[in-house]
Length: 245
Image (cartoon, rainbow, N blue to C red):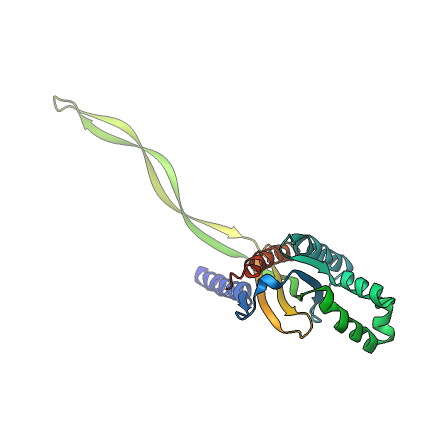
């Protein structure tokens, strides 16, 4: 019976390892023909993969992360602005409500953005959230075998200089085999991932791409996403200084 349980636990461990590592991915590419120091103003646009079903709270928290980790990470070298801010600026130029125009006249909206966005920005950074979820896995009851050490006292013979035997007490550590029943329970795995695509304003040429997909046991997806955004901006600052991957 213990052998069957051990086999079951081993199979479960293999399954959990596959679950945690299957979608781990960190990839990056940059156009080496581009002088990234010429990029001074970048519009940031957030989208969520259609396969994800997020609550309003999760979407608002994603907006907050874009603001805190990307928009506000700008410095004297590169300034980031929200896509909504770029829209508003173009709207002031043409004297129109761009939010309304986007729905009422898509062609006019696209023409205005195509004409004026390159005059206001050097590039657009598309941030696409590809994963943001939690998986719950049932772990059946199992038996864990281990070796413990107990402190014991034993009598050890000793001899005087005259050869007389006497006994002393010494402390020793004795190995003891023990087992522990681990009750059935659930384990939770967080999944988070995002893609970053920097494209030049005007012709839309891709200049920089970064993919960061993560899985972690007992991890909070939004907290993982925050770390993904922070890492992406650290990498972007290096690229902005022409320190390419």
